[in-house]
Image 1 (tube, rainbow, N blue to C red):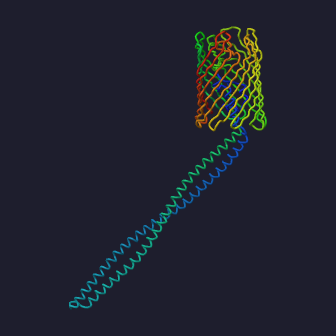
Image 2 (cartoon, one colour):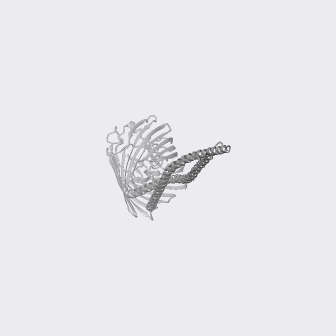
Length: 581
């Protein structure tokens, strides 16, 4: 989010120190921010064209997904109707089979009854025949009359006729039973086929419902994505974000030592072409040098800044306002002033000042699209007075107003970006309540920052910044020109989609003399080297954790108090947690 804000309001970094950069004690405070801003600018090259293309593709995808969803649900309805028809046929078949089964049972019972009657009838006929034959034999012997024998044979014939009739009926019923059985078998086959077909249709229906659900999910996702694009088109920079850091600086050398704990707080809100942000720091600073002990726990001043943009086809105009709210502690005792250590060793040497108002304007010209930008900007700081001590009279300090002018050129390719800047800052007279007046000399700065993509998973950032301050008179102490060279590199390796490894080397070389607030003296030819290793962990789309460890070594030449050259070294432990709401 912070880089995104810098890209949107590129001129605002001229207004305020960006507290998100934890390596500020070795390199200029916003060098990493400028580099990251250039990389973000590259991502935004031809943004409008790509956005419109993406919008068209999203609209087409939405239409296709909705068409597929409609077709999928149409298939579901068709399969459901077929399944219902087959289920109705199967139910009718089942009912018919039940009726036929009852008929079959009736026929089986009737066949069994007729078979029983047939057996009985034939048995009776056979018995009567035997009886008639017995009578006939008896007649031969002369024991019976012929009439009785004839009657016996006649009755036997009648019984045979009855048995034959029963067999005829049995054959007829059996044929009907077989026909009914064949129909039943046919219906059973139809039922089994219908049941199998219904099972297949239900499987197809279940699959179709699943596919339709997936199509609906895709269609809804495409619709949501399209609606988000439309919303972003109307309001492309709507975001609320913040971060919290815990940074610890520790140093020692030549019998001197100290430490500082800094906890920056940041909150920002971007909405379309407007942005505002707020940040402050909690500082616990401790000097443990024997004879120079000091400690202070305080909040720094609060920085409140606003920016609004007027974006045209060829020109971008940014209007900015920075306000320094004196919530920190400026009025320090002697013991607390000892806790003000050198800014080349710790993050803060000052903890507060007066009200400051810094309006600014920057005009950016697009040259052949968004790849090349030329920016001309200026801001003017109206600085309020404040009392820097609690135990010294007549030392209220009224710093002179500052006027900064700058020119920036940016070129952004997909795989490399280059930013060049030229800045000039001039100041009005500064006054002290005791009547002292002094001028602060003009400052010229030249900045070159380069990013490149070494491989698919590797990035490299290189920078060279030059700071040159003209002769200045501070509290009646004449200081020679003091050019300072800052240069370094940072290599980043993408270990995974959520994890980055960073290795950094930063060097500062001050030619001539440089003021040291630690010893309240001027030192010759200060040189400092810092090596760092860090890791960025993207926990999800809204949360990011950054960890970094630095080791540094710094050497000072002789100072204006007559002390010999000194060497300092130390470690810095830096952690930051970023959250986008």
